[in-house]
Image (tube, rainbow, N blue to C red; front, side, top):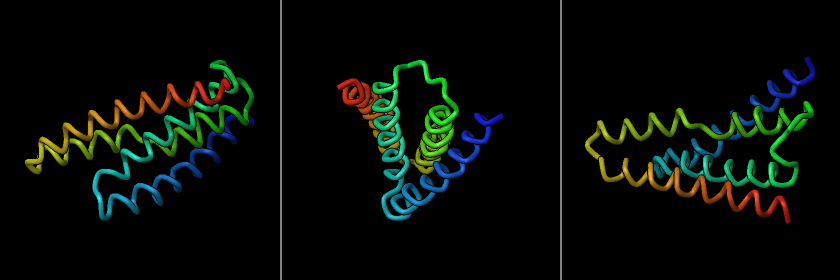
Length: 118
C-alpha cells in the first residue's frame, strides 16, 4: 500500500511540474516544452537508474521513477502535439519534433545512466 501512496504523490507532483514547465514553454514556443520535459525526464530517470540499478524495488524509488518522472514526462502529449502539428499542415515541424524527442530522449537516458553509475 505504501508504494501506491508514493506513486500517487510522485505522480501528482510530476504532473504539476510538467504543467508548469511544458505549459510555460508551449505557450510561446510550441511544442518545445513537451520536448524539454521528455528529455529532462529521460536524463533524470537515466541518472537514477544508473545509480540505483535497473531493479528499483523500494516504495520511495518506485514513487520517484514511476510516479514523479512518469507524471513529469508525457508521451501522450508528445503524440498529440505531433498530430496537431501534422493536421495544421506543419509536417516538417512534426517530423523534427519526433526526431528530437526520440533522439534527445534516448541520448539523455544513456547519458543519465552513465552519470548515475559514475
